[in-house]
Image 1: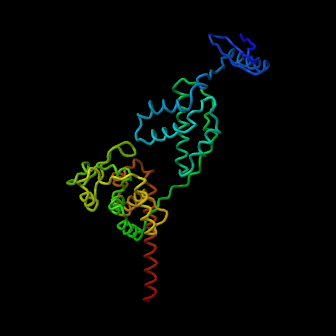
Image 2 (image 1 turned 60 degrees about the vertical axis):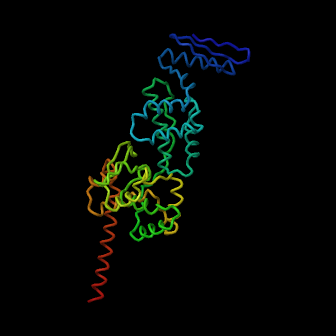
Image 3 (image 1 turned 90 degrees about the horizontal axis):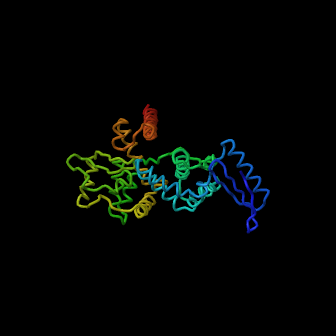
Length: 338
């Protein structure tokens, strides 16, 4: 049964007691209080009432913290935890679930967009979406019917195109690295170009995890959360031997390294090239040298063909271009001679 009483403050309090439930809400006018009370009674009589009191009390940050502590540890890799912690530091984490609207998500997107790729922004939104759905399905928290991320448009992501260096560009870059103030810049660039390792894998590689007799390097806790044993070429092994008395092969933080690497690219006149693209160069070269998908995946750590096919395609395109070039050259010489 519903009652509507006037408070000393002049506001009106609607109270409903039904089926062992006590529900109340305060309004500025008696009319609004009465209207609300009738709507709630109608929902209760038809077993349609949903109690959003938890949603009004719990913030998005509370959900993310629980998800990070209970769900994330059972997943491979560290990316998810890093991104969840980033969201927790943003003001959106303080918004109560009942108040969370698409506008909050859109504002969040706008505020984190600078310097981040569209795919990265979409990933942050996906985490919020996933945390919300997990709470709704598994944690017995009554949330508004629609996930606030549903109505937010994803950032448009272009098909990823890796920058593959020509042999001349690579040689120019390597030469520019030799004049860098970072003594081992040419070594780390060449090592990446040969091994297809990621920057984080290279800078975490300890000399104790390099088997100089079997020519292998053991990468611990890689991006997908697994260890990976990478075969080393004779040249890669030479570079390892050069720094074998260090604890880590190349111990440098990403920001400091980026500074020297970008300077070398500028001197070599190599444009639109990231250090990570060296990995694409290495994988493409393996395919050009006739390696099978299975063999390349051992080196690169990719789990599926879909992850490797773009490198395979690039390799085929480059090979096609080389064949076309030599065919044209042959026809030109043939015409000149005869």
